[in-house]
Amino acid sequence: MYQLYADGTEATNSSTNVLDLWIVARLNQLIKESTVGYKNYELDKATRPIADFIEDVSVWYLRRSRERLKSDDEADKALALGTLRYLLKELAKVMAPAMPFYAEYLYLAVKTESEPESVHLAPWPLLREADPVVLGEMSLVREFVTVALEARTKANAKVRQPLSSLTLSSELAAQYAAIIAEEVNVKSVLFDINQSERAVLDLEITPALKAEGDVREFIRAVQERRKTAGLLPQDRIELMIETTKEAEDILTQFSE
Image 1 (cartoon, rainbow, N blue to C red):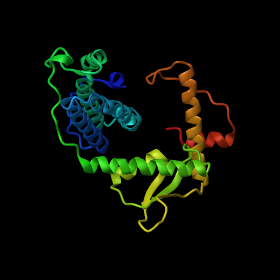
Image 2: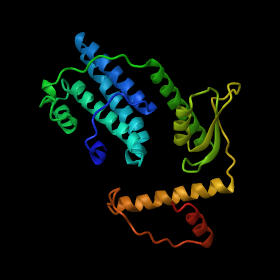
Image 3: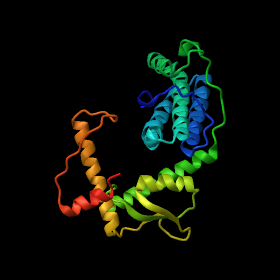
C-alpha cells in the first residue's frame, strides 16, 4: 500500500493525527520490548512482539488510514504517508536480527539516499517512551468497536446498513468517537455513563438510512465486479445500470 501511494514524502513521527500518534506509540512499545529481549538474551521476547505490531499496522492502522492515503487533503495525506514510511523503516531495523533478508528488502524500499546503504549498517532504533494515554484510549476504542459490531451481528443488522446512533457507557474525545462511528457505521456516537450496557445501538432504520444502505450494497457489488475484472484503483470505468425507477432515483441521489 505504501508503494501504491508513495510520492517521496519524507518520513515523520511528529503527526498529531490520533491514528499516527497511536501507531508511533505502538512502535515505541515494540522497540522497547525487542531491545529488552535482546539485552536479556530472551529471543522469544525480542521477536514475538513483531508479529503483534505488524497485525496492528495491517488490521487497524492501514485499514483506518486507507482513505487518508487516497484523500484530496494533501496535508493529511502527507502525514499518513510520512508516518507509514517512518514506521516501516524503523520496523525493518527491529526485524533485521531475526529476519535479515526481508528486513533488507523493506529498508531499501523506504530509505533515503543519505541513509546507510543497508539496514545492517543502520543504528538500532532510539528508545522512546510509548504514550500510555494514547495506547489506552485506542485500546478502549477497539473494545467498543468489537462490542458494537457484536451487537449488530446479534440484531442481524448488516455493517453496510447505516444506523442513526450508538450510545456508549464511557466518554471519549471527538476524534476517537469519529473512528468508532466509521467502524460501526453509525451517524453519531452518544455517551451515557449511567447505562448498564457498554454499547447500545439504535436499530430503527428510517427510509433515508435504508436508501443509504442499499447504495452501499450496490457499491460493494460494483467493487466486486472491478476486482473480478482485474482493475486497479486508478482505472476509470463506464457503468451501465439496469434497475427500477425507484432504485434509479436513489442512485441518482447518491451519485457522487
